[in-house]
Length: 435
Image 1 (cartoon, rainbow, N blue to C red):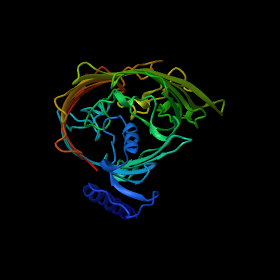
Image 2: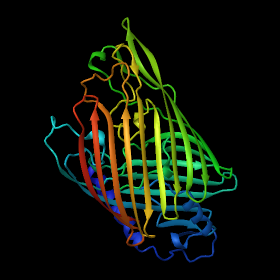
Image 3: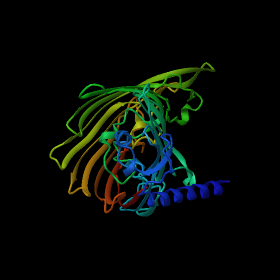
Image 4: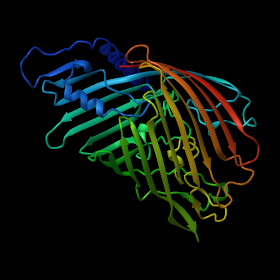
């Protein structure tokens, strides 16, 4: 069954590529009926519909942009865009490795667990196929339905990447968390971005008000998911619990000029767990919270600066470098019946310079740091304490819809035990074609 699914997905993807190659001319039924559905390239679509597609594409780097072709009616009130990105990333680690297709300083292994100091990788899992429908209505305005998936599941199985409906400022479905600023996401070949960047997808209900000249505001309720670690001595006293309250988030953004903005965001979380006392299980909770400040602005017409800083307790799932460590909640060594949320600080900053309309370079520095509380972890623990990362890259778009690039990453990782830093280097190349 899995082989049949993979074959069907391959045939579907190849069909999309072949269609996109020939979608330079309009294909339609020879009739004057205004309700006729026509198949057109994006260049020949109704102007107002193209504007909506353009204004609603994701500003996050590494996300698909405009679809290459679409089905539409003659009035331009409906459009179904179909597209995707075929993305290959060969890479090599040297002088140390990060044990993942994406580069995480927190996953640089100790020499006591492995002798590997180099590795060769090839990743095509983040190739994406998407459908985007836009319906222009009088009562609900522009209705946007977006579904995208990639092949990041086990054994390259197809996996939902985004899936939501959006209208009148509401967004309902699966999308990037509102704690993440898509506009300030750093330009990197590595799919996750810098280690200190917020990068997380979640099921949500959100509302954005953007009718003011420079300001926009968002409020959201998101599905609560807790990544937790239990100590061996706690197994009899605490365990996971069902979550009772959504995560609540709010943002405020001030924009000026064409691409300049500064944004503040906040999240509050009620994280439940089960605790056993006197042979009776009871539900308890820990309050987590987080704040973030992010910005992007032009220093000159070709040079821009970007960055963000996040701080809070129980927010490790949002941060690239800590979300695989399961440390939203950790043991409280001073009380075996309690869990606790540790403070975490994560930030990055960088510069981008556009050499031409087809070539740009960027560089950035990032850091993530965990803080101890109530003697957790133990002083001699190798538990992740902080990681640092530098990234430098260059991108070139040789022809429309194609992007190439090369990137260098160096990362450092240190644990709470005073046993020195581990480091690793990665050199990776991007070959990408959008269809």
